[in-house]
Length: 344
Image (cartoon, rainbow, N blue to C red):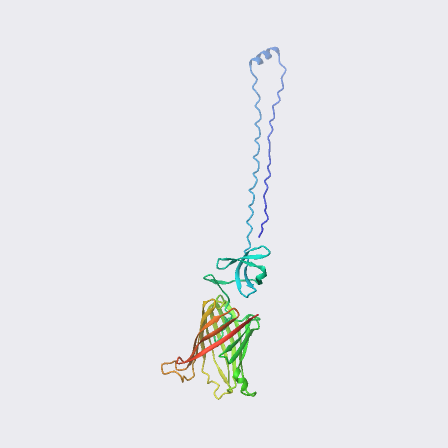
């Protein structure tokens, strides 16, 4: 920001005093008196003291100009024609090529004909000289969502176990919906319902703390349906690099003999921890009190539980998950999911 220079100019005033001589008038003398007066020297008339000149008013020191603040060059993401990306600050542009100081400290020269696009980047995270992009699946763990909301226009599409197709979209920066279908159910007849989905409203309360609430519904061709209101909190980074979610609710059966046969509560503890720019560990645990555990021995919780541990491979616009689901800690089932983040 440029600051205009203001100087305070001093004005000098010189006040000079003047001396005034005393005029002497010679009196008329007699000869005797003249002789007497000649013997006496006339006392010199004292001169009036000169008035000293008033000191000049000193000029006030000039106000120093504030140094102009340098505008820091923006951080840019440069996409090349081969699809690779470079992140850094452009320190020189000679019209034909750019000199880019990258986040790892190295410098690269890029001919403009090789550049497909340039985009100014906001905050980024650099770990050991490597730029960590945002986790595209930051709003979801496995089956359970986190409290982080999808932003308006963001969307995703995922394929679970090669049989369940699901998609979601952010309607606003805080409200999102998702909907899916059990693909083999398409061949089970037109009279059966084959849909599931939900709505979630998520809000940022303060730094690293998010809350959310919503509703999940399920209607499958096995003449089974349920609706489950849920609420939860997530603590972690907004980028999804690490987060822990605790949520709870209750499932109510639809078109079943016992509407309360899905337990007295749904309790979920989930989290994901990023270990590199392209990888994260994800865990998810479901506890369903009020159900019967027909899988584990007497050493179990006494009700149905589901535990998932998997590795998430993070790409720029997609991710894939590979791991295992443990039913009541005994039965292990392989789990696979591939997700496409469609962005805005």
